[in-house]
Image (cartoon, rainbow, N blue to C red; front, side):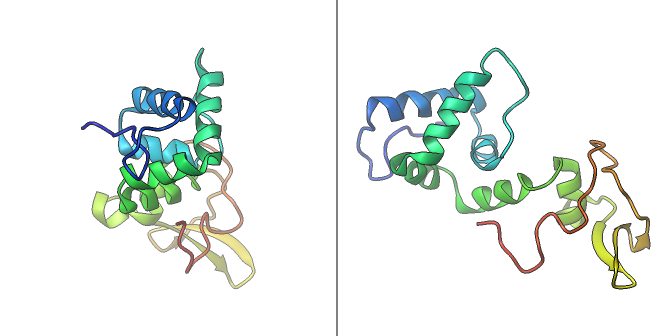
Amino acid sequence: MMISLLDADGREPLPICRAHREWVVSRWRDEAMIAYWYYADDLPVASEDAHTDQRALEHIRRCPKCRAWIHAVIPPEVLRRQRRLSRYCCAAMFVAVEEYEFHHTPRIRFTMFRGEDPCWMIEDYAAFLHFCPWCGKPLPDAPFIPEGTDAL
């Protein structure tokens, strides 16, 4: 699939915008990955290109024409999913909490045990997980995304 570099209105972008868009598209090549890094607070795994990644992403996040471009070239459902995913510690935890039925994985959910103790549960068993089973990061004392909110 070819991702257009043109502005949302179909015009040729400014040279600085084109350069950053070309970098991002050539680097991640996929709508979902571009959307994920657009929303993620962290940067990709350290590499010799980390500084260029950071500059390109910062430009696209701050430039009104590039923000409009992202929303024009990436489908809304991909943007929504990737924005939500970027709030989790890892993709596996996101799937276990939000897409467990689709992927046929055990469900993990957050609850306040007895109304006062934060508890991450596995399949409705109060497991009191403190660390993500997949990435090992500490789990928050609240849901990754508060119930009833949408990350878009």
